[in-house]
Length: 225
Image 1 (cartoon, one colour):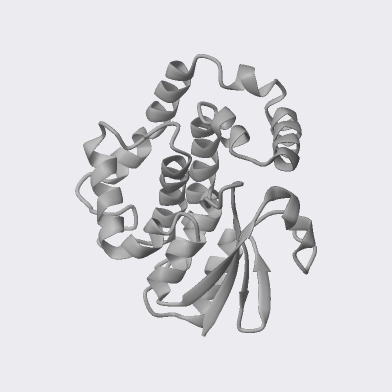
Image 2 (cartoon, rainbow, N blue to C red):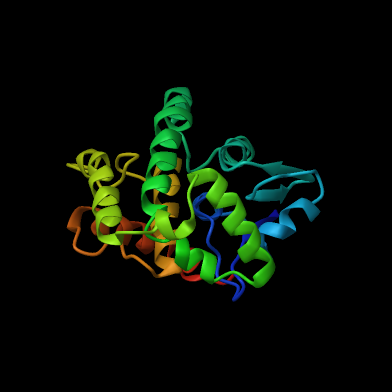
């Protein structure tokens, strides 16, 4: 079975959505081959099914949106190499894991938001500025002001990750679970944008990400498809 992913992309083809990265890691974890379509923000409404965001995955005759919904379907279709380790793990991933990923996304994005804007084509620059300024309720230049303070705040917000990694190689324990992919998607997103290296100088998080690269290197290396 080969899956097909609509994958958020910049003007130069770099793939940036942390949620799409989480799905790509989940597919690699499950051993499911997949292809991708580079999808700009303004392309999303053209995807059949009326989706408002990506990732959108076509698999086994189904079209599924939302990274957690995709992960749940992958778990049902391919029970080997678990993503949740049971109902309790699923509940934690849908609750605490998703909440932490969303919180970190907001913190990490502030120092990166202008770099993301500047890497869009003209049509998508306009879309990105309007949508993000509604979200942040201030101009992008103000969102990104004092970047050192923004970066420090994001690093401080990562403290729970470092505590969770004490004594275990992955957030999921001895093997990675979907919660690892949720969070790894954020660091991959930042790495692809290139404005801030949130792994630099942090041995705990850098070591965890390196272990993921050992397992899923080809997937993480494919930054343009």
